[in-house]
Image (cartoon, helix red, strand yellow):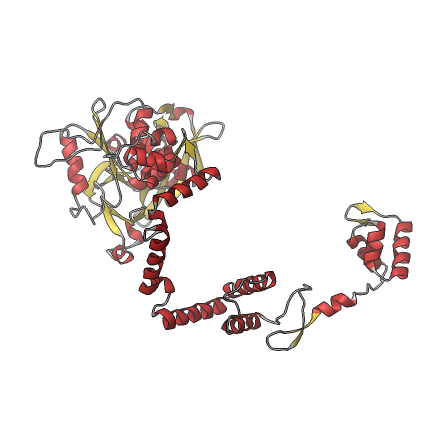
Length: 499
């Protein structure tokens, strides 16, 4: 007989049956033969022999509920259990807590702690019981303190402050420098704090003169060496951008005026004089309409720089902090530091891969079919995504185009747009260009004509942005969101000539 890939001969099976007949106990058999219990039970059941349950186990299963005194059979087969249902558990613990000094003023025994822990798990996993407990707690707090939660009581707050003043001399323990030093020392000893050159991040942030949160964020994103170069006058996103430009060995001027014009008074974040390029890093809160009330602020700023002979790129803080690798690739392209690949050496494929756009386009994947340019080994280097803006009028919209980070594909856009037109057979093609990154003048080479230009916006909560159509009209304000306006959106159209 084979049990769990192990073979047992017929004589051994007979021996087990004989010993069970003599002892009338499975436990004695498997202990004496030093074999797993399931082997003995399997052999006996296979021979049709009924296994006797111990009287002790049967007694454990027949119980009386400690709450309603009802007899019940415990199907869980556990040796501990004193109630017949979850409701009885809740009622019993409530009764015990209502008894005077039942669970207060003394140390609970291990059995009591285990019982309470078990009951609490049952209560918080059941929505009805959970809500009943919450309402009960609110009622007690209202009766005792006049508020729904005791922490909101002014009496409790004042008592908390008085206790801390008596013990530590301050309203809150962390206001006492000795306690703060002791906390940091303990965290250092336990390895919780990261140590850099003998100092933790709290000490470094104090020495540099920036907030601990800001310093820690830069360390996590750019590393300690970049974080120690921080300045009190530089924001987090500007520090990240500064690090990128230094990695490119690019000379730049930070936060300085570029003209003596006292009317406009625009001061760019980064000026690259040799490349005639200006880089703006826009914090979502400070550049939203909560602060910048003029919708055309960014457009006026861009036009001003353009009139002085500078090309511009405007990045938002969520783009710099969450998609720094894509921002860096856009800068590489602007600075002509990308690796050049020629489209004639690549072939076209159609795929539903969203990961390429997620990793290489600031807005991530959009809607529609995706056409890729890739090498023979399958490495994708460019993607064009198109969707039907109007099926009836045969208007095709280009919703996404990007190349692999750090690469420029010469002739890639032309090759992909021709393939998309031949495949989809539209009457016209339209696309929109975000002026924060460029004006799309290169599209004229492919037969596109500039159709219109208008301002647009995204919704923001100060941490991330949301597409304006996610909250149509002004409904975003009801969600406590703000608008952050762009430099404008240019629409380009191309009529397809049928051959």
